[in-house]
Image (cartoon, rainbow, N blue to C red):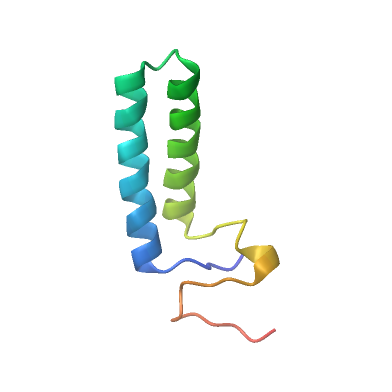
Length: 71
């Protein structure tokens, strides 16, 4: 998979992951809201760390303009 996320996108997702974990803590990790927040935090953290967003692929969205590949 080619990276499709830029640095700003990755930073925002990392911050969102932290905020979602804080929300899960505030809601209670065992509540439905807490579980949903943890799952979303994990998705945000993983996509930020690998710089690939699977949802961007079908729409050909790229926020990393440094590594543009020809199609």
